[in-house]
Amino acid sequence: MLKHFYKYQGAGNDFIVFDNRTNDFPKSSALIQRLCDRKFGIGSDGLMLIENHPRLDYRMVFYNPDGSESLCGNGSRCGFAFAQKLGLVGTRATFETTDGVHTAFEQGAEISFSLADNSGIQQIADDYYVHTGSPHYVRLVEDIEAVDVVTEGRAVRYAEAFVGQNGTNVNFAQVLPDRLRVRTYERGVENETLSCGTGVTAVGLVAAKLGFHSPVTIETRGGNLTVSFQQKGAAFTDIWLTGPAQFVFEGTIEI
Image (cartoon, rainbow, N blue to C red; front, side, top):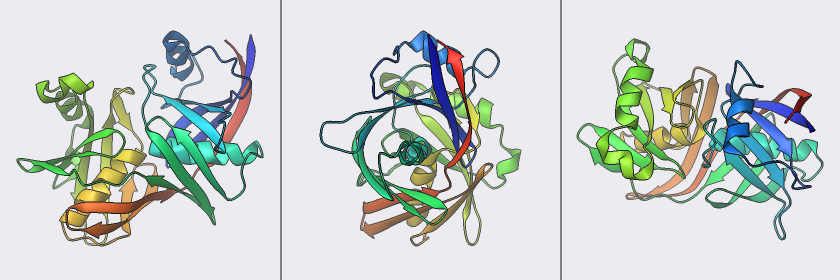
């Protein structure tokens, strides 16, 4: 069966997107793994399906390259851009994805995505653990370019403490006077990605504990993202991830 696909990227995080409103996409882990493979498929950091929803603007199903489902911040922003391309939404949308209902809206050349309230930043020695819809471990470093992200990230991702929850994503963050620089090892991708939206959000919330005020600018290898929030004590509300989401190309593939 030939299927038309679209490719989007948000700050270097790239995704395959299918219009699945006819509900005919075979939701097979093996197929998703093949399509996301950069040698034998289209290649991406994840795959999304845009589907009908009985009450909301649409449903977005997100898969990691290993076929597992999760929340994806940059993917959600790209999914909104694709929903605009399909004519499903205007400048604002409410949609359901893996962890529940979210809102996204367009502001100029950027798209903002809402995340759930958070009051659960956990400190582990000198590091932090934050669940922003996906689990994230945050480690502060002096020189981010000197970090072996894959080796060090993999060690934490597969640490015994996180085995029961299928591991964790791992973020390395360097604090600068006006922003933070971040590199992320993503579970499901099992490699470093150019950016990670939920990881950037986790780092933005940790930055608040370090004295930063909303909005926090996060620099990734794929571009800059902004995390804004309201803070009261240990609780964070009105959390938004903002950045670019761009169409790259489209094509057809035999599935």
